[in-house]
Length: 155
View 1 (cartoon, rainbow, N blue to C red):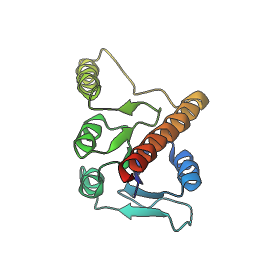
View 2: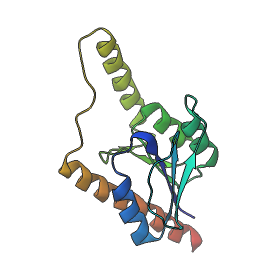
View 3: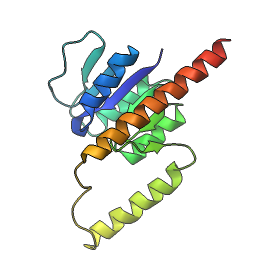
View 4: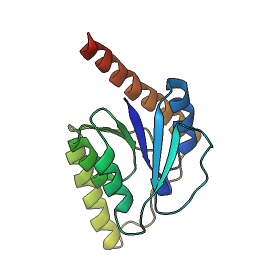
């Protein structure tokens, strides 16, 4: 069954995921290195992993299945989850695919080098309301595409 995983430590769209998941009656698992408040719903699980580098990412990679959805801003992780057959969407609504991940990783690496050289300072801008709206639209589209595929494969 379709499941949504959230790389939760820095995810700004958790509430939006809850709304969409509730509408489709999907389970959501948040992974984090520390406790956080989550709604007291049977279909929402908070998985706290050990406090080591990549622990949350490794946990998701060990549990995600084909046609699950992962919400993350971590580009190298997006590539890892795509290889497992998951659909990956960033908090701004950008969908990572097998066709675009190579270019996205290359751009990320270039920007990282420019930051290290002092050419670029700061991180990404905060999410705007239109980013949240676009994320909701894209998450809905991804869920619909998976459900159509599952229905087609069942017939």
